[in-house]
Image (cartoon, rainbow, N blue to C red):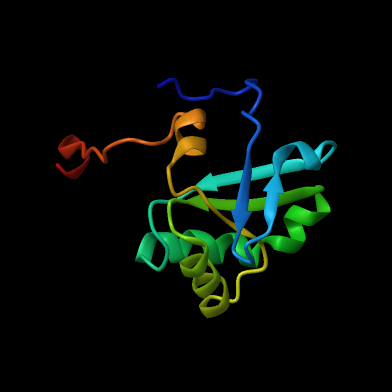
Amino acid sequence: MNRLVAGDKAPLFTLQDDQDKPVSLADLAGKKVLVYFYPRAMTPGCITQACGLRDSKSELEAHNTVVFGISPDPVKKLANFVLKKELNFPLLSDEDHAVADAFGVWGEKKFNLDNFI
């Protein structure tokens, strides 16, 4: 699995959003797209990240940027996360993590204990 680096073209994908509607990267030609991946909805780190992006929406829109969060959560769980945290951007379901694999971000979590010393 190779991670994308600056300048790489993003792999095209179509995923179901939190409203169970398909979202295709190809349909967003001409826009800047901020895609972020997170491991599971409603965990503390994921909440902080999602709410930070929610609160930055007007600034991102001023730069013609749309936001999508992608996780392996099912659509129903994503809908609940959007509702509870009043998110103003779609979350996409990648249950088989094929898109995360294509972006090179799926894998076992690794801790570097050197960072804690």
